[in-house]
Image (cartoon, rainbow, N blue to C red):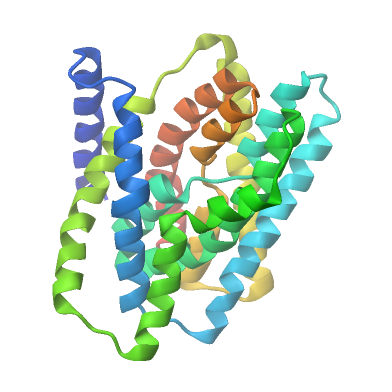
Length: 299
């Protein structure tokens, strides 16, 4: 395990050093993020689903995700009733608590640990959350930011997401017995760049401010362990074991989606809080998944 994690740590420290030396700037993360979201992630998602054996029972993976995300929504809404936060801060806490970052954290962990089989399972699990993110989460951000929510915008944003189209194509093309070795070989090249780009992105995003450190740590821990509990419950409810159970628990415990930062900026929520929360929860999740969950879930 350590042999697989050590190179990632070295890359992260290298990225941090390059940022400190101003060879790389924090703004460069936007370019890397676009490459990941528009090209690399869709490519490996397509390949993992296209080459995997998808059984009918796996349709319950998105159902398990929906159960988890709705339960997280209930937990955070009830909990915030006991705190007197500003409206924009409440909105920021809700959208970060009920979303998770599958692409930058969950996918690499499952790919590194279980190969393309594990990746295909968490992609299916993440499908429901992706739809929830671009509809319900975006709607909540608009409500707390007092911006008018357009259903049309939410649907358009969903269909503009390359990962959604990668999933659709990967599920449809096998019906036509499509098989192109040149395409799959090209996807291998993109897959090999995945971990490097993700870790560099995380090193550029890492920027903790002490003013909200305590709150961010509490939210990170609460979200992680609530997710683990709900993920375990969902796996038991739907009868999943093995890699599928691990995908559910890992997916449920992931940190907030980095898209919540965009939602926060667009709707004038507490963007600094969201940025600080991401800076803490993303590296924390990498360490947590690599050590704790790996020890308990891969046996």
